[in-house]
Image (cartoon, rainbow, N blue to C red; front, side, top):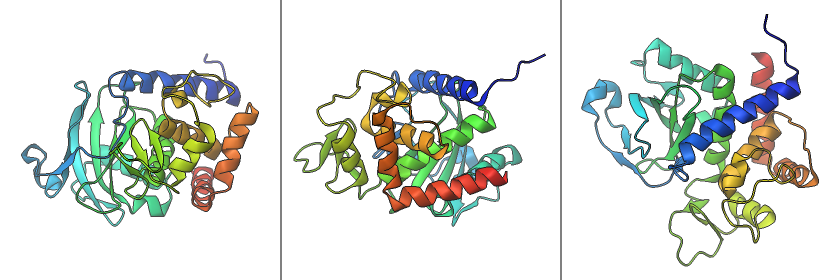
Length: 266
């Protein structure tokens, strides 16, 4: 008989799973969970008509297998998507705000087995303000749902108006993956919570919601956003201050309300 875990223990176990899974991915793929420059326009002949006019992602993780590529138009997944992969998009619809779904232009189904790569987003190089979502269907529904919320934070803060990969002559916040433009949310977060701190930072439970959050500014923002959306307790003044920062941004507050409404309706 399986013992019933308390919600707090479950969250700890989930965080441990997430940290282990992401650490496996980012040991050699530290900055490519959200990639701002490796997508190119092409037709993938192995994926058939569903991939026409799609963008090819050059995944640096050699263990990651690309299974299928489907375009998404105005929030609607390509009709050619197989049922076992359509459920992934249905999960995204059941989790993410409608405005975010409208910016996802492509769904890539990838895998390297359970508890390794979870998901990633790439900024489109051919469509303005558009994103490619890659996700591993071998993970559980709950893990993928948490991961989608994490990825949403990247979509909101790593767009063209927020970040450039050019690190020279940076007038905003210089971070590991590039230059966060002046007045962007990412630059503000970096200046408030990472001033004088090198990436990766030394992990402390008083400073970061997960060990993975200490890896970089943008992952700290995404991990903290996920914890804030799921109403995890702030275990320190620093984490509480990060939560208050999200409370002050209308985009995040609106997103959290819509996500929580969807989660409660499920």
